[in-house]
Image (tube, rainbow, N blue to C red; front, side, top):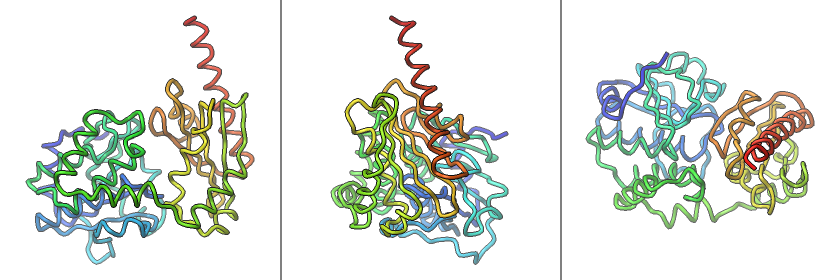
Length: 329
């Protein structure tokens, strides 16, 4: 069982650590990459030997973060996980399983964190792990440079949908203000992260919308991409992350589902919901997790079986909501 730490205690353990590797989760998003790279730069500023490790390739769109990637040239003495709720999210590539058999420290904001690390800094009220990490870095005595600010702003903005998601709080905006004051290039980053789509991404989006399905009287919308469709579009996996928000933009939809068939045959499922619907409850029953309005899971088997399984859980959640509304009326 993990021991919970506060910001000061986590900073003290990082300060005492040597030969660190900072691990990001598989299928990396902006928060895990941004936090991993920001922490790397902070540790490097303290003169520590550190590097970032991810099971999957880090998308080229995040090259501006400028972190050192672990190349096996040293034996890590301290393993730090950032934005990783459970061991199933570490992934299988890049020697990650061997290096994460024992995890020393974890910094995370997921309520479903399984407590796999020896010591954990966890705040599930934070909209992104970046919200926690800025305090850790400053407590380490490291100045938030423009480069660190860019990394943390990436995590903060992507995990909140550019501050549109319900997880966004006054604290989130105050952290964003601190990052702007530290030199984060918000105009350039917002353009890159939210207003730029590659031709390959547009091709994948068109295919996904061609596959649009409605269920349960239009209360659920589902889009999907097969393994072949993803390959034919040529799109990078990271460019598909914001695809998950599309179904929920449709009028009357309460649950939006995005299914992506993986090269190995499994199916990644993203669940997005409106206020009052629990996305995490839907995903958790299938071995996944996440947040109240945004969650996901990964299922083995073919696409049709994955559809059937997730739709059954959506139906159960919709029925539970109807019962709650009936009792309240």
